[in-house]
Length: 508
Image (cartoon, rainbow, N blue to C red; front, side):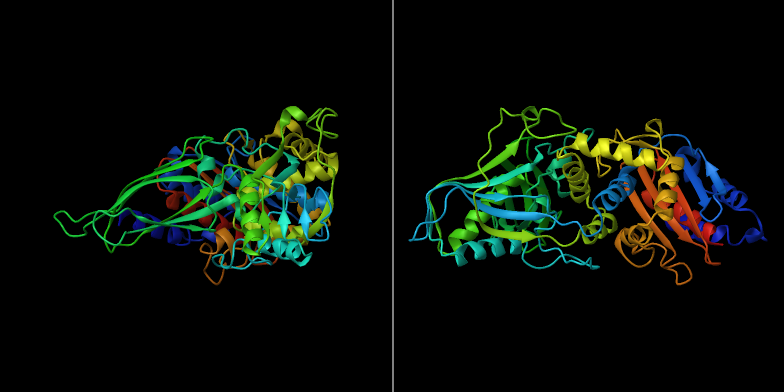
């Protein structure tokens, strides 16, 4: 009840001040801060700049550094949009080491070669509000259909998931050790299927004492699952509670489950990351081939390009000592949707994996090296063109999961101003969540007088909240703003209430 009262006061308090709208923005924000307990202990950084004049309307700790969380995606998406262009596409191919014989037999390995496509999944394109539905393996099935249409009946070699288009650097520098366990920290690979994640549904067994019933989506057996969750009678005093625990050690292929689930009770869905996406893709592709009557004699394996196989991680090509299978005979191919469509997904739903793929795609396209270092080096050049010096930021990844990242509100606003003045303005605005309408801002700024006026990227980690982007004021002009909050120790909803109220004040 106290929290609800606090949020209500924040929503109405500043507006109730006499002649509040006649005051400069700086004084209105200071009044808001004076009456908001959450602002007294947290570290706040704010800059608001009028885009038509470049005038700073308000700033607080604008040149201090903050952990930006997913506001980092403003940098990786603007880099990709500018360097690759909105129409850039990704290619996924199926290549055979030898041509099929007259009987439809291939006496060699068949490779599923990833080209960085983020959307080999059921995700709707163009971006659509709401949950993802459909077959998460539809793209894999389509490639298998193409192979079957070639009259292939038998493959004597292995099915190889090949993600060597990018260097095998699955985790960002500065990620938490448990991030890859979950879908939000799924390992990064040039061969990405279903966002490199799967859903494990856990339901009660048929009777007391039975193991919990498990279901995989997609239905691909990858991890070994040690299921020690037991169904228990729902009756009792006190009543049985659902207690589900799970763990997977880093690098382990065993997922351990334990706990209890009441008979007849609701279950739980876990969305978990896949340790080796290229291997998972090979297993899924082999399964799709066999479902179409194609016999596969060999194994499902992965092929990576490791960092020690690269001469220069910022430029060039793999070391001459590294041998690769020849390109081979193309059996199937798939071209992605234009990059702009994926950037909308990346920014609007804050998709970490896709932001990491954007960074590597830029490195591969611009420097012939799909590595984190190549992408970050190109980002450094891009930001220099935007007037942002290297001393104004520290960025280690594309998604913002890295707690080593540091940005100041002034640096963020400078990037926003650069993109607003660039030819990419309209496309860049189109990828951002819109207040009261879609993405991570769909449930914020929903008042009809405000909805549609805030175009901004959210950011959230433990003790970190961020919101940066553009606001169209009621008189029609635009401002760029950045609000970065670190080290708060209360409910995130209270911090966001103050952030949102600042945005409302900017519109007046």
